Length: 167
Image (cartoon, rainbow, N blue to C red; front, side, top):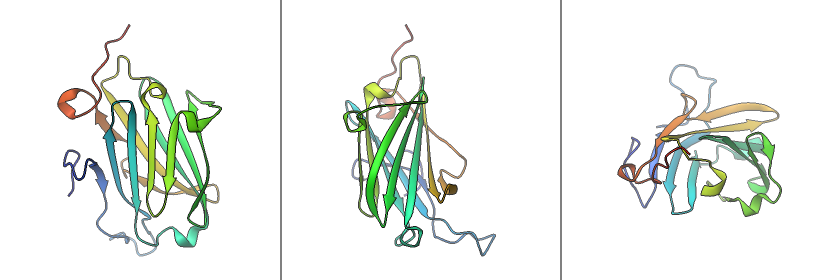
């Protein structure tokens, strides 16, 4: 189940953690378990699986999802008590009005995000870089992947959007 290219029910697991505890430090605790991604014709989809009950003690929290292509897209999903309150989208550091026209976000034990292709500028780009951070009380408490960003290669040979040549 680990690896970038194993397809399970249409999702490609991108980053996985085996348990909620860190082996090297007894006080460190992971909240985020798995990050999956997939491509539709006109949307890039992400699914984030936290460890069961890992988010319940946090109350108010934010998921910050960064997608880097020709521009950077940032999706911020705010939750309180396990319920999605709102989400916003920035493209090239400019907040977009009407985020529901650019993406869909849902949360019920897992976070699902689908961003329209037109928001992610892919012309001349061969890969997307994806990172997810969980924030609580103004501080990051967990990230996936642990290395910072996941490289998602584009191109039909990668079951992704075709590579668009630069203008």
